[in-house]
Image (cartoon, rainbow, N blue to C red; front, side, top):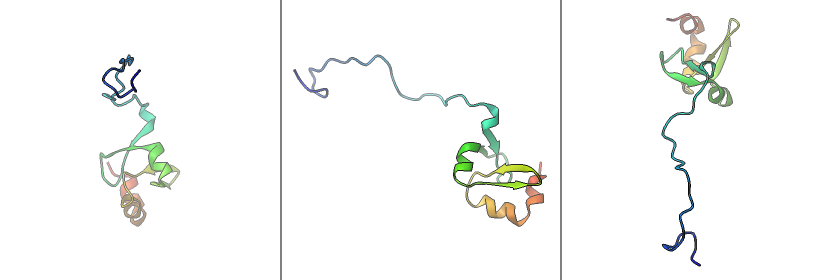
Length: 82
C-alpha cells in the first residue's frame, strides 16, 4: 500500500475546501473608518488590535494604526463627519 501522496493512493476527498465566498457576517460586525471615509472595518479585529476610540459615548473603529492619532488630534471632526 502506498502513502497518501503516491499515485496509487485512492482519493477519498468528498468536498472542495477552497473558500470562494466571504463567510456571512451580521451588519453589526462591520463599521466604516471615520478617518478613511468608507473603508470597511471588522470591529472584532480592530478591537483586538486596539484600533478604536470612544468619544462622547460612541465607539469608533479604525482601519489602520495611523487613523487613531488622526482621530485623537480632532475627534469632533471625524466623529461628526458625513
